[in-house]
Image (cartoon, rainbow, N blue to C red; front, side):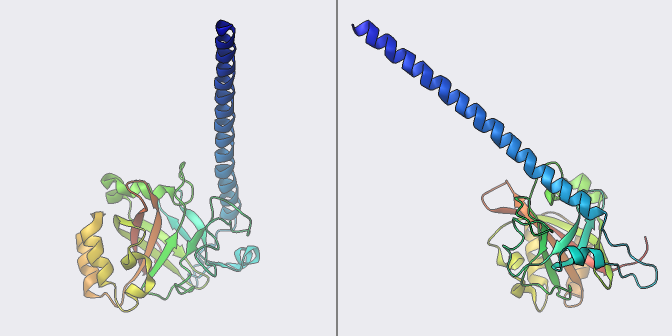
Length: 254
């Protein structure tokens, strides 16, 4: 009798193990499918937006934003970084949660959008403007900011472009650093309303790579030069953020 009970118990246990493995397999399959859907959706949105990317005119170096604004009036600029997949419209919502999981069409999307801090001036007149984007594999969204952690890439790739409805800026990358998401010197625009020296001090202390000559130059004119920061999540420690720092310079043909 005991053998029969033991055999039955083993059969039940084996069945439970099989069911658990099947459930885990199904969940893994669903998770992979769902992850692929997220990336596919992000790529589809980017493909459709690239067709609407503003073109700088020779006359006034402004750009046509009519089609973008027809899609979403919250679009305020376009950012691109050379030799990366970063080439996106920038939105600004009422809060920093507005576009964290919403695409440019206003639809729910885990990939979200590239967005300007809601406390920044929408017309980019602040000394420092801060952009956010999700860190995604496969070079989606701000995933390519990781490339600047490698010194060889950082040294060879220093340029980008910020296009606004009425003007454009060349972006000159001068530092890449890791900070905690609670670092006010980076994430509180009120910290650099008057000058950018605190931010430059932090950069010198925390940057993985930085251009010392550029940092010195910026210190001498800290109340006049404008910076654009690009921020994304990172995995080095809890709440780590990768920050790529750029200077905004009035656009000139390159």
